[in-house]
Length: 398
Image (cartoon, rainbow, N blue to C red):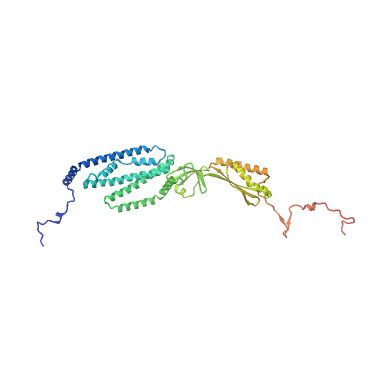
């Protein structure tokens, strides 16, 4: 079959990809002419919406000033209002009045596109401020008292900023029709590589963040773990400095510190004092029965809680009594004098009652080869005077 030269080719029927400027101008002019009243109302409403949102923003900033010593939820709300961008308010107002003005397809598509991008970026900004505000709120006054925490917060701020804006970028590219699978995979592999390379640093950093959130201790607290005890002087980004009670400065990584069982001595409710008193076995039973009441009376005289006052056990060379008291508070400057007064009071009371405190004693016995005990002192019967011999008896040998 022969094709006629005058027949149109398939390419001639393909629609032109380039927009027609004349058609676009004509369509826009017709829209403006037909809907000028709606457009004017929509612009006025949009302007009113922008002014209203700006007023709310200024009011929120005024009510939630950042001059407070501690970061509160009001401060966080003020930061969110302050970080709301003006261009986002304009795009939001345009998106609200878009349908009312019966905008042409190209304008509606443009507004929707700008709103999607603007909303994603603004949400990333809000998320960043919210996360950082929550971290600073949990850190409390420790951040202001410790300069090292300020450095830690700067690192956290950089990591949070990178994370939220990376997610926002992926969302924007996805809305634009870009295949983000490769980008997400690359970011994941890069993050894993960086995490493995700086595993120790990130472990200590996250442990520092855990200290900020959980607050197991703060600067100035007396803590102990294992056989180590001291006062916390500084909580840093990677390490915590503890002044030992022996005078040395111990620098321990946050991860190693949190891996231990930590006892916060500063916040304890009371100080427990334990005494084990041994009295002699020769003490009379009626006196032994009065000893618990004596101990309890002496404890109550010092305004301490008596947790235990009673007979404990039969010792090797004493009858043992347990005396346990709880001194309110956590101040050893109060507990030490209380312990000294109790010890002196116990000695004075026992002397007055005729109770003797026992000390280790040991009695040795000597036995003959057949097992018969041999007294370590002379038999008193041997020292008695003998009866005179009968008359006529002879003391000599026959």
